Length: 356
Ligand code: SF4
Image 1 (cartoon, rainbow, N blue to C red):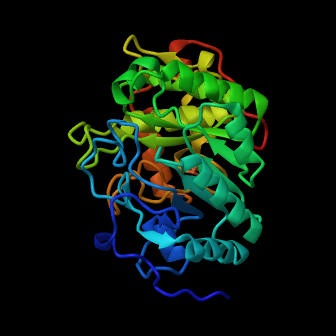
Image 2 (cartoon, rainbow, N blue to C red):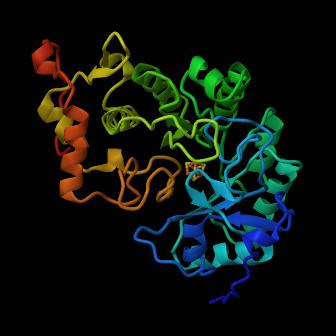
């Protein structure tokens, strides 16, 4: 087993921009990799690394945004202290070999040379081990997607973040059409190897989100689902997060659509775009959600992102592990509290396959 020195660079000692030889390692990841000693209840099952920092984009919700005054080395709620790549990458390979992590995720802000740096890191990591690597990155050309996929990256995540154009414009700016277009073309050219991120609570309706989730299912794009999280120093620090009821309804919708149990056309929405029915009886809906999987972190296989949206001991938007029976019951109750059921609205209900 490899042994590592406590080789982190102190946060205070660094310039704001990160040299290419350093890589941000999320605090939870650093613990799993043996680089840092902290106690955590739920360990990450993916190694989360940040490539560069200080993004030139200016998303209202992001700690790395151009005008964010959030502390350096933070992404959402999570600290990502920098480590030399020559220390972090072998540690990832070692943890993968020992079965402690299943994937490595490169989170890439738009900083100078970010694509070259990502290609370089992916190649280095791929030469050490065959861990599935994903890169969450802004790209405008299919050739760049291809370059990543041939340099050892298994999956490229092109984050839309917002589920509809108006929310995108408010939260991120004016290039919605370009972002959606590259995502669609990449999904067509590289089926099953493209992902995206969607954030609940940026101003979309539940109908907007469900419609976009269906499109992503149809295009075989995996969706990392997030709850908007206000963080100090960001433009939207004072904006409230989505209600847990709404988030649970979206989680249930994502799961039902992703498993093929429902299509968005089967769902019913209020005039304000809130989900009021999944077109299922209460018993069928409960049976579909009974294993609790709908409420676990969604995204690439093996991604559990502990406490990315949550405070330890606070509201669990995404569970980074299997749910306990009482947690499943609580989550299903939150989904169903404002619903009408198929038997009440007099429509045909879908039958569960036997053994489901
Ligand atoms: S879903 Fe998880 S592993 Fe995949 S790109 Fe997003 S954060 Fe990374």
